[in-house]
Image (cartoon, rainbow, N blue to C red):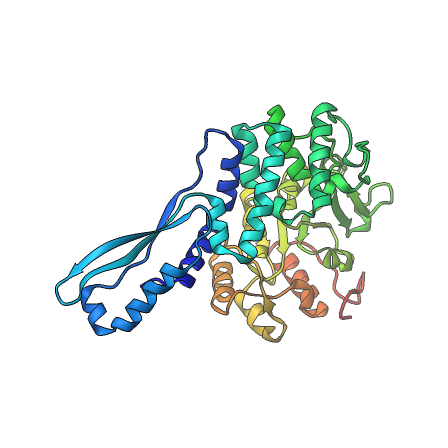
Length: 403
């Protein structure tokens, strides 16, 4: 027997799960209201005989429950040999989203009423088309989360951009009254979707700043016009007259900045999808790469992506022994990736598996004592890659964190 409280929970869960879809249906006039039933599982004759008072109390509560508009309870007559004729509630019929929200109550109802109101405003301003409905559906959480002022700004700005195309401008050059120059950067996605729902464009046409690649030339003889610390767009980095004997790709910038001189070496900051740009640089493609990243699922994902572009990548400090030697420095990985990483070696796969079996932990590369990390990098540079290395005390004494 499903109680009133249980039915309200079912209704709340369905409302939360389908809220975006139901709000989108409000936009298009041909979409009917959502309808669904919730079975109440009335007692059988045997269950009635086992606890007749509980069954009667359950039925009385349903009979006295004040049903909101759009919600009905369907009753049925049961004829039992030992009890006789009984009227029992068999299912709840929900005929529209407002009824579902009223039955759910609480925060779910408040969110629905806010989204419902805003979906109707969006339809009135931008049209009752399938594209506008899709935007409401996909941006449901954003629309609910806005304050009234923020929502009004989003609608006004999107309408202004439709009337005044901004192709060729930078985000902070858009001259919309009532919002500051940084506003579009924070609300760009929903403005883009609303504008696209009307115009059919997939982007606003804004001019973006080129992503920069940060690198340090660790060999003074390779410096370019005296420059050894460079941050430039990929095209300019690719045009640098560099011919290193090898490249070190490091995930975190602090470790890049701490690297000492190393003959024939260039170190590049390569985090996340930046490795795709790094691996396309001609003078990088021609030489072996040494990669050092965080010992976590995302560090291994970067290594995997790097190997998709470059055949000669050796990792350092990305093994199970390094992980276990620094157990006291582990922290939880809040968002581990479960992607298939086929580009890893057997040793690297073992380290990744250990990370996961230990509860999705991570060891940030900066937590490894710097002397130990630098010694491992030098050993890999000289041993794995068979490249020259200066020994401490000869040329270029190690410096950096932990020294």
